Image (cartoon, rainbow over all chains, first blue to last red; front, side, top):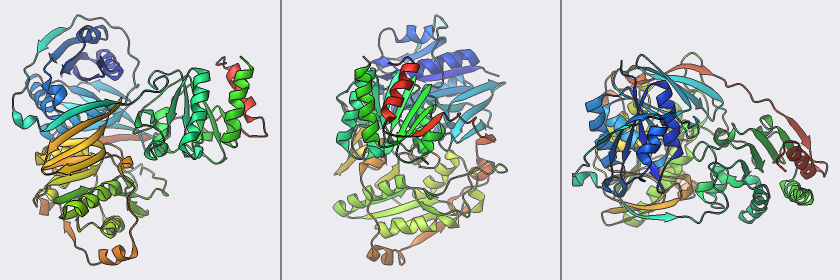
Length: 320
Length: 259
């Protein structure tokens, strides 16, 4: 049985994503890791994939993969899979990864397990660990067919680690079919980044519906600034338009694992807990003593977030 | 413009969903159901487009009897008609099997646009729309925060890691919308009354040309082997704020050497 595991690599904002490197690290630990990198990539991309354990990289620098979404990539990966028959293909649970995986699953009539947090590969059989229903359950799932299997992996499921290889590079041809250019990227708009990015922040100060209004996020920004941390939010807050989607933490947003997570006015819906439950320390402030967040915090204050947070800010300033 | 909205009717948000250890599936029978909020956003977006362009909005959904209530909600909001794929043989379908059934039902009639939520609020796989698009051979445009149709072109603002992308596609196409795209309307009495007279077409798996190898438990590629509860994180100190809540947190942060 093949132990070759492919990683569908992604470049976002000019850099290979950390989830790509996490997946390559894991793939190299479980089997033979190979990566696919379609579209323009930074010069050191192949070397970076090799450093994390990729022994082969399929590349195409063709801008068609950047300028036209999903279809060119899905078509090329489909023919590569048919040709090389890897055991598994890993995709990030990202905007791009999910679309390509969905198209491939339908095209190849093969299963795709989503939201994978860990997996094993034994004699071609895959077992995947999935946090279900907002991590209130852990399911173990498998795919029962013989041919290639697709896994969509949650970001930050694995630690990227050095495992140096000198990858064989195979250039793949870009498709020339106009039919594949039906989803056109016209413009990329970068939202004004405020403060440190959530990804990689050691401290996250996060707000929920309990903050009641957009302007009350200023208080969290001040607290985050004082602590050198980043601001995050729940889906309810993002859906209300108070803060941009890039700050959303949860099953449908970012997954964070900071050293310290301060949850302000967050009840702890399963959707949110899925994105922050692995934080090392969790502090929660909420007026409702029954809020689920209190069942998983290290310190919980049942109280008014508009009193507790300003007092905390003053205390931190005073202790400097 | 003929719009198909693909959406799910799911256990109501007031229900704590459990997994049946025997079947390893969510317990769906016998619990209150509602139109998935993600699907309601898709219905709303379809209705706005229909109000602007004319045409129809057809809800296509799959599930057992309990879900009729959610189908009625979509019709009461203003959807023109509904297609309910309803067959015991479909129980245990995985994402791809679900997509096959939906695609077969949608493909029975010509359409201009399929609108779905980005993912359902109960299982979150988020891949069914992309599979449906591929099965029907239409381009998928996902994660739309805003969408518009001009002539034959769909334009969306698509969420991205760092902001948004402006993406366009020619119709017919499939688009998935985020829950932030709109505030779904509440059904009004008039709509609720009108919904009673609207058509709900029911299809069985056989009506859709699907056999046991395609759908249901037997057709599922994915199988759940084990259902478990994760170890509970031990709850720490939870205290009432006696006016020193902020100080207590500061003490805690000092102890943890954060400040």
